[in-house]
Length: 191
Image (cartoon, rainbow, N blue to C red; front, side, top):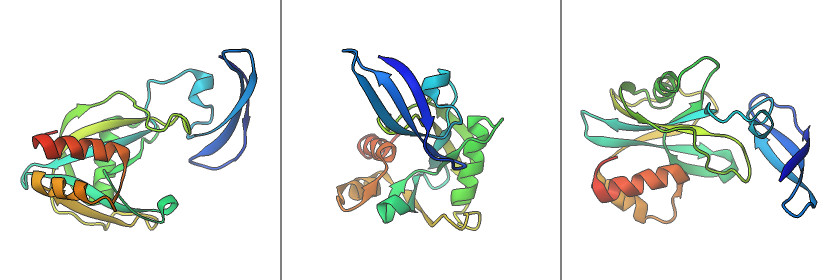
């Protein structure tokens, strides 16, 4: 496989479409349309060590509950269960971005980082976006006073039993990363 040419199709602030021409394994010319948050997509600059975003998996230590958000997602025309998440700002560490996003989306305070994943990809057929999963402990009271006007977020505190019940409801839309973590928490009671 060999990349031949790349064209930027859109010109937006946070996300753009690119069309890439390449030669496949049999020497056939092909093209691929994908989204990137980067000015120069990762397949061109070959830099994969920095995540574009952080997904925070918060455990409220005083309540002994996993924290999950229910957020309105425009492409889904409804609410999706997920974890607090957001873009990593220039010069910001994953932990700093996680602390900021957790506060903005839930009103909760990050008290301890438990573990951090390397950059991982969830929809690599459509985008080069990567996220780091940041497992944390938190405390405080939930509120949405730090939400942006485009964010409609409800915060839920789930026990292991409540998580099992939530996963049984097949009408709920789940983020894939969230479903995987919730599935493990429902079975084991731990992260």
